[in-house]
Length: 62
Image (cartoon, rainbow, N blue to C red; front, side, top):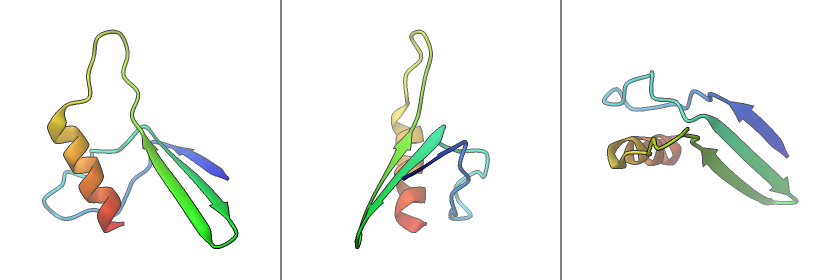
């Protein structure tokens, strides 16, 4: 298992490099691998739809 903060994923040229998830958790067991991006907000801040789409695109292209 591994955990990292402010990970820089490989991304398309259309995605600003400043867009980084707050964390990545990766679990490997035998031949299986599970990964999760983490985005933390404080108070009433929300993860916007566009921000989420950028993270999903980065994750799929990494």
